[in-house]
Amino acid sequence: MKEWNQKVGGIGLRARAGIFGGTYAHIDIALEFASWVSPEFKLFIIKEFQRLKQEENEKLASGWDTKRVLAKVNYKIHTDAIREHLIGKFSFEKYVYASEADMLNIIVYGEIHAEWKKKNPKVEGNQRDNGTVEQLVVMANLESINAMLIGQ
Image (cartoon, rainbow, N blue to C red; front, side, top):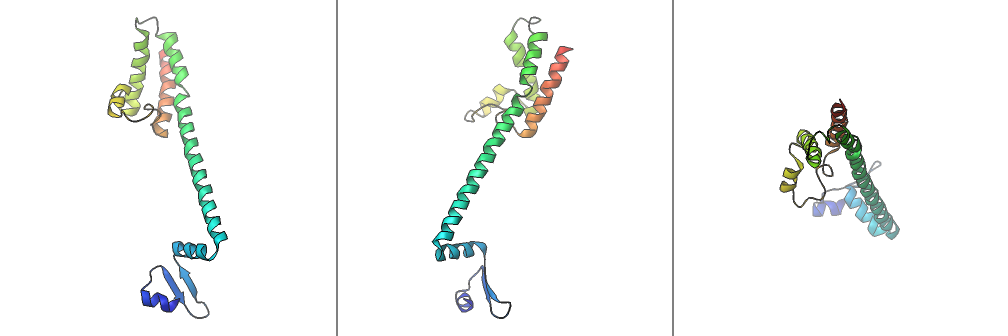
C-alpha cells in the first residue's frame, strides 16, 4: 500500500510501517474499500443512510407542525376579542378583522398579507406558514396582548 501510494501520489491515504504503523485512509476511501470487501457492510451502510434520512425528514415535518401550532395558538383568542368588543361598533365587520390582522402582520412581517402574497405568488400558504419560529412566537404574544387591549 505504501509503495502504491508513493507511485500514484495518493491523497487521503497513508501507509506507515513499523510497530505503530498501519494503513490510514480518509473516511470516504475507507468506507468505499470496506464496501468493496464486504457486501454485508455495504448493505449496512445503505440501510443506515436510509434510516438517517427518514429520521431527518420526520424531524423536519414535525418542525412544520410545531410552527403551525404556534401560529394558531392565540388566533382564536384574538378573533373572539374582536368579535366581542369591536364588531357592532363598526359597520363592516370583515374589515375590522382584516385591519387588526394587517396591523399585526406589519409589526411582525413588515407588510400586510396582500402585499406579501403579491411578492410571493408561487409560495404555498401564507405568511405564518412561511414564518420563522421567532416570528410565530412574537405573533402569538402580540395576538394575546392585542386581545387583552381590545377587551379593555
